[in-house]
Length: 501
Image (cartoon, rainbow, N blue to C red):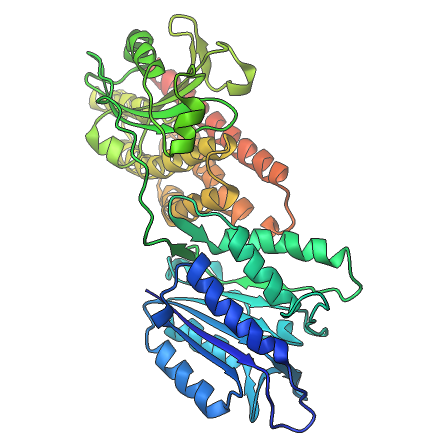
């Protein structure tokens, strides 16, 4: 459930505080926009406008914050004032209220909150981001603060609008932001708001420089209760003697292409994949599945141009998104743009070994045969790499969708965020293994480098260094990380081969 407290103070009893008719209109349009664009129920929105006393505001705030498990939105439009110690205050009709107290209440009492302050000096509100380690313990929780202007500037009312400038741009961003699968994301609203602010500032001297801050791990989203996902009633999923297709997802961009998840019916090896791929590809090329009516109208009866086929060894690996191999088929055949792994002439596609699970099985077999004595290290390495493998498969699978334009940067970032803790645990465990055997020490180095590559992704996408990065920079960072990961995987294979000799 989503709850909101909307405040628009337009009448003041305090000396020196002028009337602000626009703020009352701000409150009305914000209430209406939350209902129309963010799916709030009118009964869950409390609006105070005109004359708003400290007592009435505090009373309503107390009721709102008692619903700590819900998404809470607090909106304020009115005067803002800086005290002598440079603390910003909300100016109510009969007194001042420190804005920091509202922020503190929400961050301690609410699981998810969105605070919006359209007032002068709004950016002076203290809102320090918590350490990343603390945020991990509160995954799925968060607080977002939208302040209309910088600490030393004022908020404006544009002459051609009946509303405050910031509120006018915010409700427009909420209106423009489209739903994806019945969900409207605050991060998408924020991105459009940035563009609207930039465009406005190019045409006025009264610059508005809002501060849009976050301390959230999980994204803040608003769900459309009337959303009814489009279902394409295709024939049953394709199946061959060697493979069972579990899921086919469209990933349309400029071409008709699918992402396919497959389980092997026999032992999963590169040879079995090559043997069964031609028939599987022919079946998948004829398969039709869409997410929306629009996609169906655009792509139905057109040739499938690209297939991403991910192979799991068994049902458990499929459930855990552990896909040791990926095949990429293209209508253009040996397309350099899709190049990953090695080209297979027999199957006419690229085949990439995404993980070293089969190699680790070989290491284990060497130990059983007595060729390797460091059994404890091998078993630990196998356990740790299997744990990191699950994260790696999820992250790189999402990375392929991101590079293909199926998901945006924020959605890919959330996949990285969701797997970050396991990646850190895997690296920490790898560092603690005692590799006494000279043969196994190079294996230790590569395991650490492989897990370290995964650990770099959160630094690129979640750390402070992300601010100011372009989309191209992030894509370059991702490709560098994946290459480092693949290089470590290849070296692990080489080490195992040398042990076999």
